[in-house]
Length: 518
Ligand code: NAD
Image 1 (tube, rainbow, N blue to C red):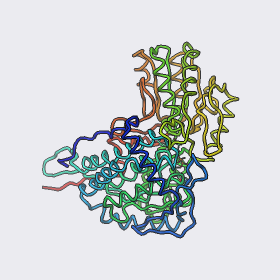
Image 2: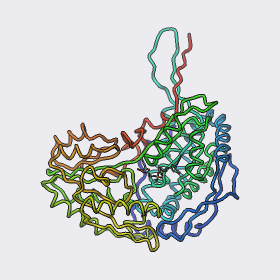
Image 3: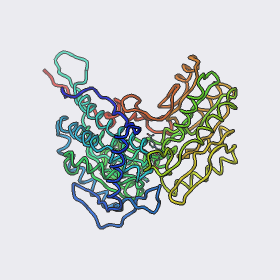
Image 4: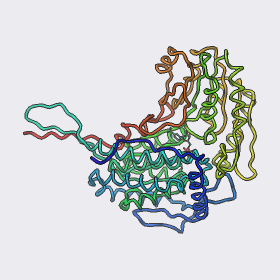
């Protein structure tokens, strides 16, 4: 531990530099050679193939299957829980140097191969270079941050002294966990949830998202290379309903780390609350869910151009498929007619293209199902408001949707209340700042939010009243950094677990007080 430097965020790659561009191009070419392979389940280090498979599709080129993944069954999920339980017996006894050491080694390998990981996400989920690089950088950050956190949680915790006794408080791991990630940060969130649990001394079954199993497998293989013992992480791809439910309901599973939609998160929470025969505990549930994030732009904002740039970046980065994405823009009526056209103009300038090309700013949405659902919302929104940018779908090669802005939306309209999870921005007019705040808080979600104003009293009011887990003032509402902006939301956005924060590892630990009479 003594040699560990303070945590620092991984620098993002500047793709304007020719050497970085060519490094990414080489990685894209290399990873392209690997497209279309078959991948196994891995339970206790054993590779299992020969099952029915499902295809992971490149959303920018829909005829391209990037990989075929085993459809694990209930029996595989159960076998993986048993393997994790067996491995827990020894992994929980490993000193923190070994557990944290695994994460640090993995971080080193990931840093060395960062472009290959980013390239995999370009092909598998349609991330642009910049978005893929940010995802990989965040994964490296989680590894580095949670390794340091494992030391901190494994260290001394103060207790009040009394005469005649020596008292200690130690944090011990929980047991076997189910890790169920989403596809939208398919490296960072998946790696973060899995390795936080493992660094704390738990063992897990990782069920990757069916939209993004390739990047998850690549990371799993990297953990093996970094020296992870068999059974500590078990890789079980397969249908969410079958594999996921089996894990969530299993009496030997002690905790669940889930990030995904509200619907699935609530279902998991309900299932996990049951205590099947033979279960000795109440399951610990970490569920991070959706958002309907708002940016308020107040009349006392001097630099409206900066605000418009931030809105467009927040709304359309990764095609709006971020839980933190701005999907509601709430504009003070005094500047509405000036500001909305600025947003529209910047939106129309975004370059749509296949994400493997360096200059594409907007790639495809993740799947045909997502595309259809988003298009339905656009059609509905065009009736609920006034379509001022985008609205069209191009599904000739892939699942492309123009970045879409719908103005004059009622705060209670469906597109202002429901998570669309695509490149659709609903613009709402507010009478004044208080009204804007009231509209912003009129949501079942409470994940991120931002306010633009140069009035300090209004900023202070937002600090007090804007009910979100991650509030940003005079900046965009996406791009949370590990350690800097611990991330998680209120209400239907989840259990506010604050990934990348100092509370996070504690969610995978339990405290034991030990009193010794002297
Ligand atoms: P999703 O809920 O469809 O799927 C998430 C995971 O749950 C997948 O691995 C899926 O296979 C699995 N799953 C599906 N049915 C299951 C079941 N019955 N039992 C157990 N597991 C099951 O979500 P998604 O489409 O992958 O991700 C997008 C959602 O994630 C959005 O709502 C977004 O806002 C949210 N998200 C939230 C955060 C956050 O930190 N709050 C971060 C990223 C994404």
